[in-house]
Image (cartoon, rainbow, N blue to C red; front, side):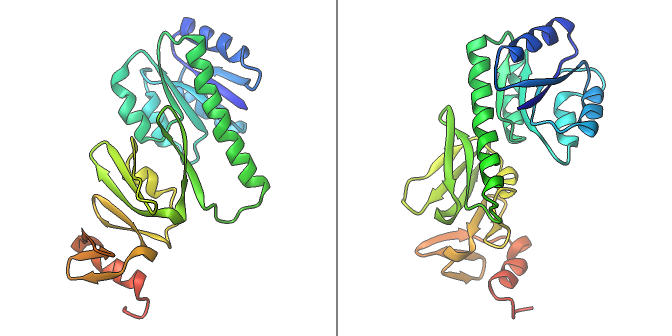
Length: 235
């Protein structure tokens, strides 16, 4: 994987470079002392993975990450645990707290390698619409088969994914992040806290959506668009 290291502290950057060089699957393209330097590298080269510090002068790591239209995989490395939730809401691969033991660093790299292989395999297979995706959960990667999703429920900082087999999965992720992974013509947000599979809807009555016997709230904000989605003739 082609990687870039970003940290404004020279000693921390040197240690990060050394760790990267010890991992055979990584090829260090550039070391940057600021987010602006990293932006220049991204304009000129294809990058698969960025090791990114958060607290940097000027543009912070999180601001840099939010500014990217096309994101490489990101592993955040910081001295502060308090940014972990925000980082995972931005769909990063992992979050490392300095000082990072080599064993923990290797675990994060292996996770990135797994994502990289999945992405490469999907591209090689020429899949037009992938019917699954992977999420970080239970200290590893969990495969979510899209046709098996009934609905997704937002629970503050977590999501509860209700599956057809009746076994829900709770993960730390935002509704917005998971919505980007779902095919827009098959899933629809009906409320600030719910996304449903359109094929699982059995009826819509007033301000409620029913999935069999399960009743969910339907927000006025989404109601008209939902009705057009399920009944294109109703315009």
